[in-house]
Length: 309
Image (tube, rainbow, N blue to C red; front, side):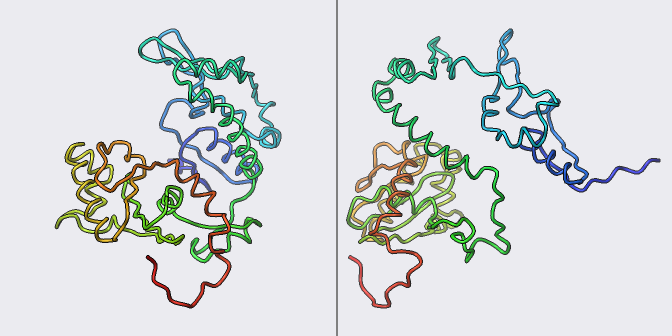
């Protein structure tokens, strides 16, 4: 019986990213095996029938993000790659028969969006400009080798590795910083789990309140996270959020509690003393993180004790 062939590397998933990795590894002399659950390869970059008689590229437009360097080095054009320019932007078809066809021309796109939201139409141009600016930053690093964190990221010199100033903050603290509006604020992030942070006098204190017990067999993470909402239903989940909000507001002597995260929008009405935030606050937090009011991370903190209000 013939022995099973051996491989140096196994790649699970034959999407265009997996295939690209396999191509580069094979060029380096490694014997690579790619496995795919489906009967076709290409992942989202394939053309499929989404309705009888209608075929569409699932997400093949992202091939525009495939760096020309990759196309050249893997000789993809020699192997049949042809990039077809899209005549338009995107088409969204709604169940009620309405649709939104986004053209590449800004004025036409604004008119189309205006059929659904005048506010979104007015800020669409600014949104496109900001996305383009961010895209330039990502495009410049997509083919760079990520830093090797070795034994972990704690204590790792990110500034040296990226050759750029770096500040690190978890997502809950970043949302809290972005949604802060003075006084002593407690942040609760209602998402998959429970994020938390305390902010007062320009001091951000990351917390892990999700680990606190809610009852003998559950933590706050279990009860007011996404799984708790699914398990107990919206009404019981919202009641638990209200109870936890009131309890922690008093315990931390907070002036108010900011409810953020993806599930904050489901809390209605808001508990007394609570305000609604959202994931978008993280963007504001990111800008605030670099304001001069934030104590530089590369400077030793003052040894003097002080009591925050």
